[in-house]
Image 1 (cartoon, rainbow, N blue to C red):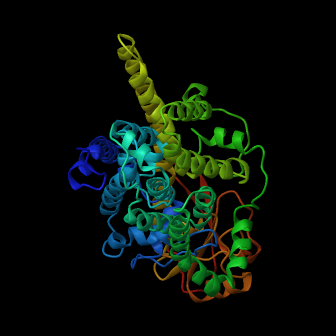
Image 2: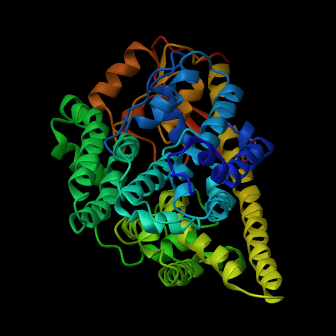
Image 3: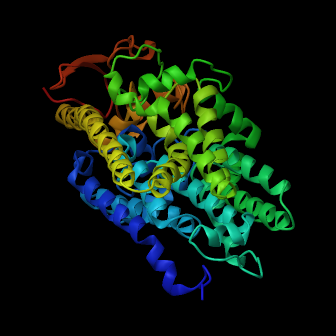
Length: 507
């Protein structure tokens, strides 16, 4: 007798490969340099929103509150970086299981495990695993949403056949899959509303051409989107006027979203070289062999889908492949700059057909060739992981150095006499203000939060400093005292201090 996928006992066993990968992912994070790395620029913005220890940084239009809520339980009670990193490591490891859990009853358990392994082998997934950044959790929401959608949409026979079973005579979609679909979509929208929109478009399109399940699918998607977008919409009215104004502000901050045919080359350049490439050229300067896996993704996906179709499992993988392709296309073709983390949701979804190919090749091979094919697949996984480890070490070293500069500059400012309450403006004011325990005040750029007149008033009433590294001296600092701070890395920061205020530097 074949047990239903809803039975409690077999629901654990198919997830064993996935759980093993999740534990290994957590251990790899704790053993890596990122486990002790100071907070990065974006992290300081998100953490400051819920931390009682520092003033909240300006929260620009494109950002969403989901990741701040995820970090809040630890940030609200302690300022310990170690506690935060360990907490985020646990959350990201558990999140990996939650994301791929529905797939353990759709595909072979080893296929799901390899898909998770492919994802967690990538340097940016390991780098951002214990960071307070939304992209990885958007990926988890997208994978879970596609999985629960498929639980409803795919014929029961195909799901049972994937595990060597027989079709469910009732062919009834599990009711709780609708609820979990809504939860997954809602969490994704809470983290990054724009990504959630591009995720649900292919799902909604597939639901429209479905049979009688389409009403439930569309309802689940709609409920999830409404619930996840509600905080963003409320904030849009409170802080930006209305949602349309917030969208316009978001597009301006992002540099104007539109057609960027050079986006593929920009992302290839950023792949192993930058955490953020803005502005970003198209000259590839990193070791080409470490990027060979990237252009191989489309043919691997196509071959995996062909193999799935021959085995009668195409409808199980098509939703994930469609969502991953759409999410990738948005960042490859419509954003004028690049960051490797933007593509994590696409990688997470597209890892499923690639894993189907890897396992399918081994399963379909007969005789003595099976061992050779299995060895080739294992070798490919090892080479991918090894190459990604090389990139991870280089990127972690670079980021750790730049974040140490933030801490060093904050200590140097305190040595000059800048103490709370205080405010900072100038280049990289947001992360520097976080480390110094100050407010950040900007009149230009993506994080402009006041006017020049408002900044000057601020400088007259509190301890204040303007820091510039590469930019020209701001006009409002004329007549201010000038200091030069040289970081251990050799960067020369110019510090401008208003005279005759509560801020009185020593020495």
